[in-house]
Length: 204
Image (cartoon, rainbow, N blue to C red):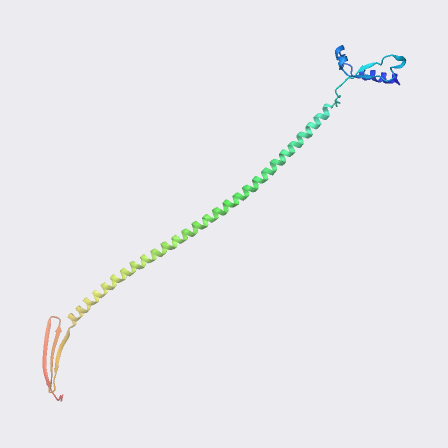
């Protein structure tokens, strides 16, 4: 039993060969020791073995270069996929925003065009009304001038007719016994005056 434990301890020391350094005497005295059971047979002192505190061994996994390259390629593909997906989402959002902004600009431009067209139509209607009023006023002024000229022409024409054709005017005096008449006949530049007294009763 003790021989087996000694063999196991020696094999453990052989496994850490190259990493174990033999301690000095003061270090052996200061370090805690382990007593090997069964060593005190025959009245002899027990063997004290110093306790070694060894760091835990980290297992190293060897990777093949082909597997590393494949893992790197897979990681690069996945990162590229994520980047392309992010860029695709960003491009889609940008397209949506651009479409909305273009639609808003088109609506705003249409509203401005409609407002400008309405303003232009109102101005044109106002100009047409003003032109019609000015034309009506001018026609009325011309009509008044023509009417005044026609009246003047009529007065002169009537005066001319009266002086060229002749006219007469006269007075009468009526009493209980007779009728007195005074007539003036104008024939151009000639004047004829007639006076007469007619007694009553009138037979002829």
